[in-house]
Image (cartoon, rainbow over all chains, first blue to last red; front, side, top):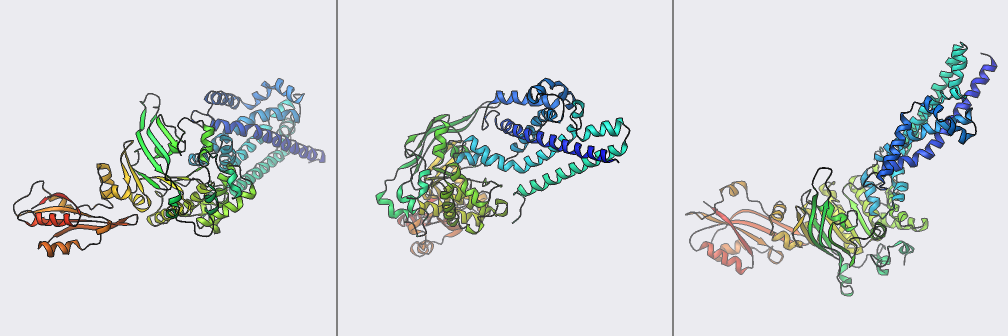
Length: 221
Length: 390
């Protein structure tokens, strides 16, 4: 493999990492509050706002049911509005974030719903405000599950990022298609896949370890 | 006064009196409640007046009345136990007192203030003066013992400097100082409930609500938790309202008891009175297993409503505090000259007061029965004629 190709692979790896990290970060920033709200805003719950809950839930479902490659193309005007352009690695972060946010929101929602309702009751009995319950009880108690969910989201984002080549997003997936497939360079394809496998392994391992360390429930006396 | 007093709830509800704030958890033994009684007017801390609670039915189902026309007063400084079977409405009742549930009729008063319809923000303030412990402890698994006890203080807005000494004090009180850095998953059930008690007392509440606090514990652990609660009541003067389905809990630490059945209070009063003279069938059913004496099955089955020739009459004799240890049987035997057949018997204690029950059989005919009854009356013993046997 020529040094040129190795340089390309290195660059593509960095691009992928940058896109996934940015989309995961922004997606968490947006998805976490949405997930918390979805989990606590049904009738009779902490932040009861059933109509808003229903509307937000539908929006999340619509976004999640749109195939990613279609989403990328469909929101090009929005991408241009946010990033100033619709082409390139930076611009690709926009559709990746749009896809990651509802995904993370649902994962967070599920994690929060798993928190024992007795803990919420205990906090209410202490005179905690809904916001304090979210901050001091729900999120800390759901954290191990949230970390596992984020791990899953990041792994999915690695897969999504392969498709943003369609709008000039760059990254490993794009490299694999253009060089490995279109230029008949199976060795490039192989290296791309190998790098992705290593990335997924690394992310999963770190996520699992972190979740285990945060989980104080399984300790034995 | 302790720096923490600034985090106490507003004066109109559960204010922290200076003497409590200082003496509450000091290392020296706090004065017993009786020492303070003369200076302290007994007042009603919690009053439920004709309270009802109806849960709206789910779609297509009719509403469910969980509580109806509940009248209940909890006097300052006492331990009141509400006992009933599961589904009787106990959990709903205790949650009305700290606003986790809202009454649909009647009034709820805390320290004389009507709180029935107060908004959630006012409830939040009020709850900081009311501690609560739970059957399943409800400790945060992500927090250490120390941080669990600190939680209500954080919620009340206490500063870090105030929290640490207070938490240490509380952990010493419940004898868990060595577990401060442990997580709940590393503790036994009894230890978890001790953490729950420390947490509930963190903001120096005047009232402690116990929601089946010992129902998930084994008998031995139950006794140690009850002893701790009795100490909290005695030494800190914390009023306790507890709900339970276990009569031993009532017998062990309560001063007053209310029996709840089908969403209504069917009997209430002094524990000794209610347990030794249960009036309502629901109370009798609860009491019989512990303080009452169940007749041996062979006797119960052969019990007849009318005397038979040559048969005997079955009497239940109740011994209360003064005469519980009197040698009644031998005295009757010698004085009246009648031999009593003892069918069943038990000596027990309710709170600190001994209480005994004896079931005896006396010949139905001739002068024996009347003589025995007269003798028992002269000893001021309560007797009840249960029936006759051949």
